[in-house]
Length: 349
Image (cartoon, rainbow, N blue to C red; front, side, top):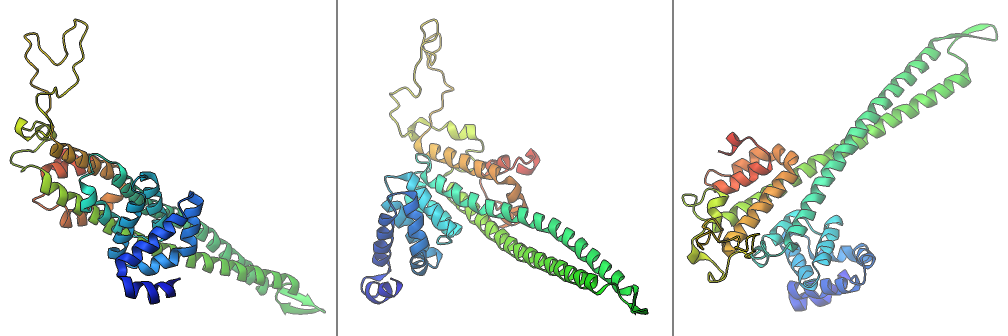
């Protein structure tokens, strides 16, 4: 199939059409059930990997998935998650898609981009947690294997140093059968120790790679959050708190101000709760426009991500501060992050 695509489809129609035809065909085959999707990815994953080896092409791939499943947010999330699991999509390409123009205007109205982003960050984070558990287990196993190898070697040396009578003559070494058994046991113990040590080194190398990967992921994530919010948040000299962000002027409202901002519910006396005794409407009702709703929602997700992965984020905070949370970052962005990280108030200022 790869050969046919490279010789007959790609030269004639170019990348975009080729990708569209291949991806939509494979997604259609796998659309019947989750099992069908897994089977398609296992069987034809190499085709997708050949077509989409870098982030730019993977971004096109995600766009095609979202287009095919535009009426099914669940299958969009599942398809992207499974492709990431098979290493057909990188977490950085997923971040780029989530913060692409087609999605950012939905941040306050749809959970689809956030679900996809949560899955990507969670999968990367869980991989690190699993590797740490495996490394901890291997270290404990290695200690036991080293003790066993030392003990086996000591028993072999003791047996070899003994004097034994053979045909009435003193011979250095224990019973030959026993010596053979102890030597075999010592060799196996040493081989087991070496094998566990090699496995530990391999897991530690994978962990180092995964830590670099999640650092790049967090950096990309926070840079995108900061960039978008800085574009849409009011100037810091005007708005420094969430309450000020909610209290926007009436002329910036996106709804008809002649309609009540909240549903009027009568209290026990029959008087609307939104009115005072003299019939004047209460002045502490928030008038929130669509732009302010977008900012509040996005700040909320920024805080939620920071809180959920706080233990891992703190390990990379120095780089995040240097490259993403620069001095001119809006105070609301910094407060959302540090509130999520449960940092002391002094660190937020």
